[in-house]
Image: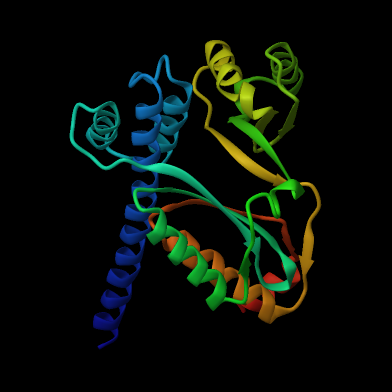
Length: 250
């Protein structure tokens, strides 16, 4: 019986991993499709598409899956039309949250996001109700062995980036969103493809949550939103201490 139980646990974990992988693929496929639709279907001349291809590569997405998504976006293959939508609101403990989605049905997505916020103690606000508390940035990451800290900082300054932070884990270059694609292309010319490149919402200040119940509920809200295929990213200004996370994971 023990062996049978172990086998079931292994299969359960594999099933969960496969489901997570499929969810990630769905989100990347949508971004590939939209990126190809809004620009040229060539990653070499479309920086947004190039960033999406990088994300696909990082997720180990098969090449034919990437190519089909690009062809759907360019119109070579039939496919759904997606549009960008953004939702802003507050989660448990007054945590500010921004939800970015790509959807082919705004009513469906709005209903699902509103339901998640309501179920887990949050509330949706109007457009720009919380985004003023965040900075919109382009973030480009390179492995630590790409160059030393001085070389990477010099290169970042030369191409017009705002900042470059270097650590043993790698280099992180920040830039204005309207310069993101141009800076990405310039850095690629010098250093090759980065580890990742994305637009992010970075909170200006953090809101600490110290109550275990609030943190647990916030995690459930974030998971519910992330589980929605329409949702691409969930950003917040929450700060959770290692002590609280340790208690929750115990």
